[in-house]
Amino acid sequence: MDTGPLIALFVKSDAWHKKCLSRYGEYKKEGSLFFTNLFVLSELYTRILYDHGPRSLKLAIDKIIKLQKEEKLRVFQIDDGIFKYSEDIM
Image 1: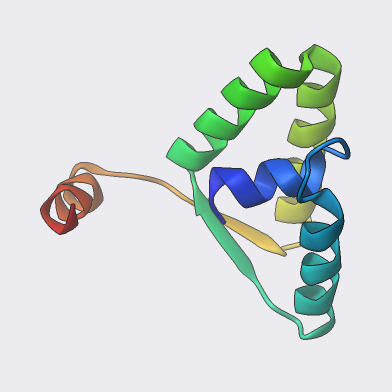
Image 2 (image 1 turned 45 degrees about the vertical axis):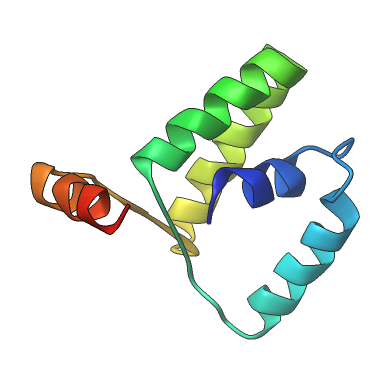
């Protein structure tokens, strides 16, 4: 998952929240597994902190941790090889 959909999922005031929440529910029913990486989470946390404040950030972090514990979200580490590969693609 990328930053935009995660913000829409976690922030009720986001213009796309309802649509994203509905779609997320559909994916969950299908047993989908979600993936993201540390760069996305870093951007997510920064944007939520600056745009919505520390209380919203705490809620988002708690949701990310819960999804990881439930094994519904996997967070990939980014090493030098993966970073170089992404540079080559760009």
